Length: 368
Image 1 (tube, one colour):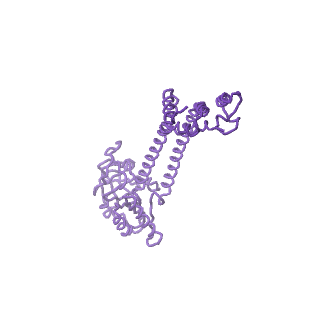
Image 2 (cartoon, rainbow, N blue to C red):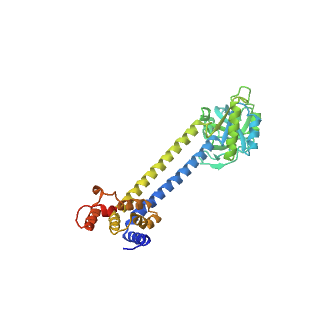
Image 3 (cartoon, rainbow, N blue to C red):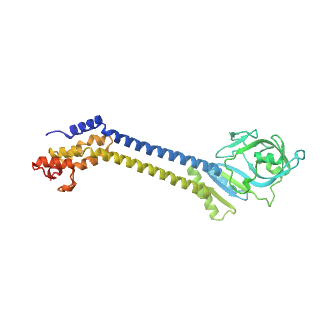
């Protein structure tokens, strides 16, 4: 019998396509690729979203926190690396209503912001107490104050009323619904009041013993941020500055770093499980496909085809993307030599017919 392996392979592939034996294998491979792609895409998007949200919680890509005004060298270094810089100031203080409104007072978390705030994320503010609010990049104008709704209830105020802070009176113009870099510190549980930096000096609230927290946030390209963080940490470790710490996603905020690390492990576990399930599905389909070709391989070996010809005859299957089935099917045709226990019923029957004795002889099948 003289037939090329290309003819053998094309006929075998065409027969399998017509009989539907390849459908399950094609479906398994397709589902495996689709599952791995979907899980990988979902994990990548989710991880990117979590990192973006973590930067919003931080207030920037990196933050210099100190209890005194940050040294000018930090801002100069950041701007020299092409980074955006914005500074905020926060501290607890008392806010009061006017005498016409009852004169009540309330402990608040005052935040002084400058143009450019926030570097990451946006404020959500409302003009009505029950409003959902709109996203904005604006900040309070000089002479105005943005507050949270609980403060208005506690002081008996309404939008448009005057709020007393230190030595000045500011008009409440908007309600803060969401603040992207709102921390979880003890003082942040107090109602928020946000004012413009230009109004700070007139309040007279900053005194030598005031408990102030300066936050200098930077944002920009990852390379520039990494260089700035490394330089700032070196300055802090060298003790050239005091009362300064560097917060970043990598090491400055342990809670953010741990959250991102756990999320990454969870996503990697999902991808691994998807890969394992896909591999099992492909293996089961390939095993079934190979089992259906055991008799074919044995017949070809009995008719005188060499193991290499049988192997190459299944090349079109491999080219079509069914390489798991190819190895299993051809491996069955090249069974172990001289071991009757490893012969299947079909191979033993064919071998017996070729030998003329009807016994279980593996020699014609295995090529001994």
